[in-house]
Image (cartoon, rainbow, N blue to C red; front, top):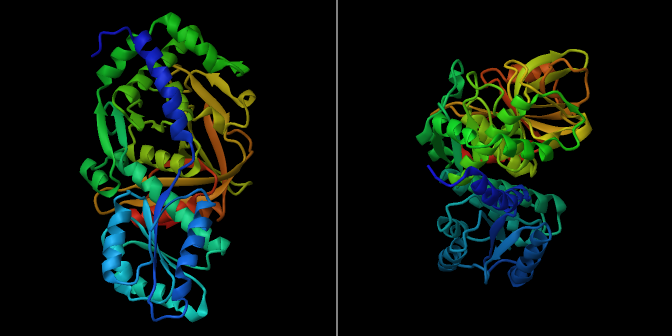
Length: 461
């Protein structure tokens, strides 16, 4: 353990965290390869270069970074060489555009060089046979058990371009998750929640993440190194603009110490997300830290639930906003909605305003600082990852966060009206974890596509 004063290390960390967290909260910037295949014998082959340039321009206009092939592919040899060149620039996905009908081996040879998600694009130029070529290679890729997305539409077709952009975002999120380090403070499954048990090796194989164990002893020692004066000083910025505050000095110090200790662990261990064994020995103490880390772009889950923390991270990547670690807690009959709530560990920006937030001690232990509010109205997506080796599945349910009478007190509350009646939602959710993660906006299609790439079964409402 470092012998430097924690206050000095935290000053250094704050400079690091400002740039690091802002970087994490930026929208995904997908990088995809683009190769165009043709047959010299087909109508439209002479226009392939122009088609290729227009495709690059259309995709670039949506903010994608395009690694464009330097020439049109009309042979297996070209496919191998150009595919290798594109792969060397490490794109997140690769798109093969059919300029005309072409031998399916041209496309498959390109894809053999790149072990990343593929997009097959056929245009609606009738004479060229582009759609036929794309359809044909889809049969071959299915037999090869190779993941691909099939898109039909011209380069000026907004729907087709947006479909490719969606796939590119998903591929980028997949790459980020594959490179991630997920910390777990304490035991890696809390007492009484067997469903949260996970297979570390299988998670690495399936998603690519690395799980990093962090001792509870280290966390406790780091909290002790934060002085009372330092905690009080930090509190002024945390509580600014919040009108309803009912925590005492001891609870403030306890909550801020935990927050700063968790930040230092994230920094020192180069973590991208973190979970903590808070239930039940230290329940309430990490709430403020979990809330603020989520706000800063470091997904932070409670109850040592790695599956939920990964889902928080995925929702964060796809929406560019913090997500909330909730639980299925109740039914709102009159609103045909479900209550998704948990103790006060959600990011403050999920509330309608700072005025709507209350800072209170934990509802069950009376310790630490809880951030209490209702999630602001608007589109949301609920997701829940459950399973183990061979049984991973994700529940995906888009809906609307609505205002409703507060029926859960002392935590974060989201009243969610789904696209389907609540009884159908509950039926579909049978066999899933009670931890429901809530992201801002409808990213259900992105989640479905991510699961298809990762080989995770989906249960969609």
